[in-house]
Length: 392
Ligand SMILES: Cc1ncc(COP(=O)(O)O)c(C=O)c1O
Image (cartoon, rainbow, N blue to C red):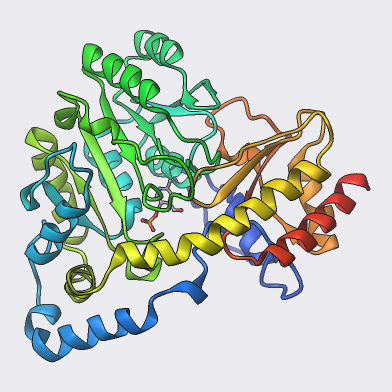
């Protein structure tokens, strides 16, 4: 006799996990992967990170190994506040340390959403944010975007129609599109959110990884917006994702609510990692490290962007990001990139099919390609393989 084990979850009984499934294929050593959005580990500041951990364990081990406070270690909150854009006055008191910005997204979802609530997202947007919102019962509504991201008129119309709980945006070098929202667009979005009182989750893990153009202030810095914005930052893309250290900047009632959520979920982020990151930020030069890292990243972006322009069909478009990790391709024909992927893997190259980044009505001719982990030569070789898969 066999027993059934019926399992159900908010993802359904057999949820689609396109990115998870893809990564299990990529363990094959001969594949050039443009799929992962992960920093190049060869560029980590190993010596400085090791020295920071050694220092903390030698001088502050008791605190590092003990429970700490929910908002985070004071040294790290102080250092994080100093990193934020000066146009958004920030003190350590505004900072809640999180285990990566992903935890910030999840805490925002868990604290603010009730089943059936609407979250407005750009089309396309970051898959794991959509998963976090969905897991907390939200209904995602995609808002149309142009080359600079979410369209203000479409946002205003969607707020009117759906009465959303919050809007989720990635204004700098978005995942997956690589797009950056210009200053006027930020201003227009802020004006709509201020007029309607809708909260903003502003996710900015990539902002410091800029290769070209001028840094832009966060939407949270527009007058009045700080009160209704959860601004998320992370050390993952600029230092090391394995540390799982990020933070959120909030104030007023939002700060209190999210502090309670953080305490309910994990009590605190690991004190050892917090103190090591704080030591790193106060004793080493993060800006100099980023300046070193963006040199190869810029070359790799250029290699991928130029290579894509050469190989893609005339119907296609591709973004040229000013920073971050991703080029976003729209083939603009009837190619389904989910069907293209197995052919590409056979040829020895991988990407993420674009459909999985849409809240609704996916453009199936899209794909996300990360340039950060491969050399320009490997990128060129990978794109040659992709060209063969496209022709098959
Ligand atoms: C837009 C965006 N937000 C958040 C995250 C999560 O990053 P972490 O939790 O490592 O800070 C990622 C990671 O890829 C991302 O692309």
